[in-house]
Image (cartoon, rainbow, N blue to C red; front, side):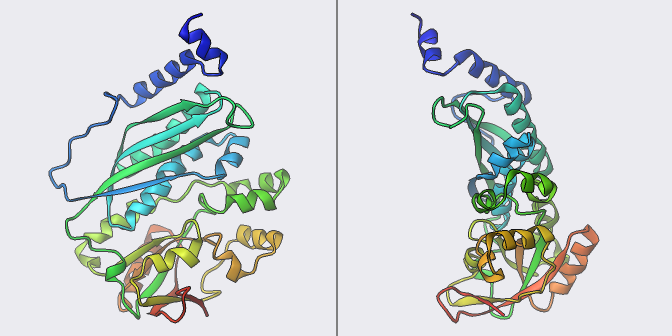
Amino acid sequence: MSLKTAYAKSGVDLGRAHQILKLIDKQNPISYFASTVKAPSSFGRLAFSVDGAGTKIDLLDKFGLHRVSGWDAVAMNANDLLCAGAKPLWFLDYFVQGKLDKKVFAQVLKGINKALKVLRADLIGGETAEHPGLFTCEASYDIGGFLVGTTPEKITVGPKQARAGDVLLGLASSGPHANGFSLIRKTLGSRDVARHKNALLAPTRLYHPMIFPLLSNKKFKGAIHSIAHITGGAFVEKIPRALPKGLGANLVKDSWPVPAVFKMLCRRAGLSFEEAIGVWNMGIGLVLICDADRYSELQRYFKGQGIGCWKIGHVTSARSSSRLTIV
């Protein structure tokens, strides 16, 4: 018995895996066992992020929205890098499936490359694996990735820049993005998901193209002090992370129009607003912590970009261990 035959009997098809690799190489020529890149001449500090599309994949898979899986794996990382003022450069993906399906992977890869094109970043490597018996269904898969970027030697945004009195400026999300789907899947049935599919499963909004240029724009220099990407743990965890020790924030309830899909989710899950802001982004995907005298300039800019933008609170001295107060 050949090794190839024996491995196939265990559930791993080396021939199918080889075809997948050829597909990758056709779209993104990659060499070596490890990826190597030439650093840009403006090379400063490296920034790294690792993330995936979470359990949203289960629903994306059911509706054949595999491109969104690939897009989200990039977008979740890119939005994290933005919080460090980093420019995304290189992405490595990790795709694993019970039984590799070339058509599914091709769609995931298209989603990855589409998001990277927006960011002007490159897919430089990754891992494609077949794990028979690990998933309850052979067609099930997971996708994650690692995004590397660079920042200036002197980082201009981050928790150390924030100060009491700063304004919280919330930017509209495109939906739940890729967080809170374990509760969404538990709360909603298949018919409910199908009815609200466009709102629930929209690709994660990429904020980098509209915000990164502002960080080096003379007109807006110093206007943005810190950035919070509202992901896992939502406002409760992410806003304090964007602040230094000793500072907290007041989040003003009803200061932005909560999309109908989140109101529906709250009703179905039996969550109050105070509970839901620890699970979902509630229509706010990114929070800019801005100079109190300049946030209105930014509001006008984002209005011109066609994206919802609201003053949703301000930075205060920390009054409790949670560091986030609903007012």
